[in-house]
Amino acid sequence: MIISAVCFIIFLLVFIRPIFWLLFIAAVVAGFGAAILSTAGGVFMALNSDSETIGRNTGIFFGLYETSLIWGNIGFFVILRGSNSISTEQRYWIVGFLLVLGSFGTILVLLLKRKQAQVVIEESEFAHAIDRGFLDSIKASALLCLNPNVIMLLPLIIFLGLSSAFRNDIYNTAIGYTLEINSLSLVGLAGVMLGLGELTGSAICAGINTKMPHMSRGKMVVGGVIASCLGYFFIYLNMPNEAVLGPTHAVGVINPPSKFLAVFCSFLMGIGDAAVNTQIYAILAELFGHDIVPPVGLFQSIYALFCAVAYFYSTALKIYAQLLILIISAIAGAWSFSVMATKFVRSQRYEDI
Image 1: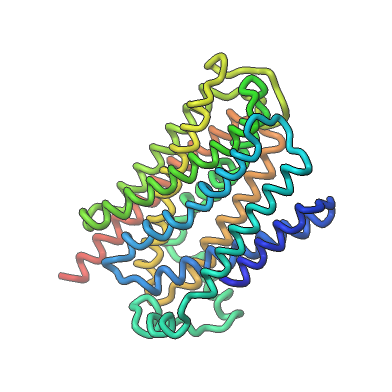
Image 2: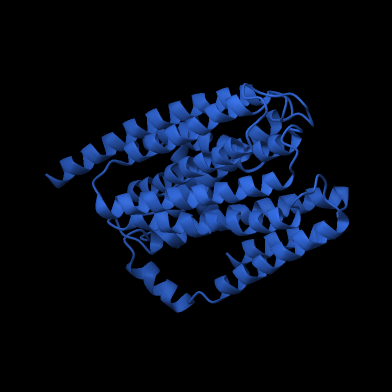
């Protein structure tokens, strides 16, 4: 986790004096750091949980994780308030603000007690095979592609990758390109609302797992997918079809576009993402509790691949086509996850008998 934090700081430093070719290298470094952070964070969470607390802990973990969207975008909103472009001075302020946050996060990671973590690893029911080597872990992750449960999870993981790119970057770009809204700072506010949505969704999932531990994970995923699809429907009503391809004066069904609805859609997508993500990590811990590292690594690989796919087609497809892809993948993912989770619960009950 320390290595991943340093990777993000390196990425931010490049923006002090951005050079075209260096930005691509920094993006690769940041992607490497993100992969390490997601995998290490998921494993750390699983190692500090058991079968009864994994649902609650995933909700708490993702709630804290997604607050980064709130703090970063608050700074973005305040610095760019009333601006239609980013000046050099504003860029320095943004980079400096993010560097302070990144440095603070790195210090917190350094304060984690390693001896205590080692005790947790030895005692956790999710850590029976944690000492595998690097190449063996890659091989184990690849072999999981043949696992029936993993195959059933694939549609939902694909949806998570596609929706992540849309939610975090593509949609914010569309807001900035919609000239009838005419407010660059609204992009930052949409990011804040996305973070609040993630926090709300995580809190709801943690509360449900605490108060109603026997509620099926499939129902929570379906609820998250419904929230996301509502956000996509409101985006269809509010945003012009050409908004992702460049600055436009076009309008959608609602004329003029609603600023409130624009940021509310981010909130809905945040709730949906939190609900789905918490259940993915929880079910992975339950399915592969004896060896959590390979499934988390495979999940992150597929997730990142389809993030890249979404960024690739976003330069050619208009926003309505992208929304259709997201809705279809969301429905397919929710169905396959529900079927797999139901079969898993039934098999567990049969074993208990």
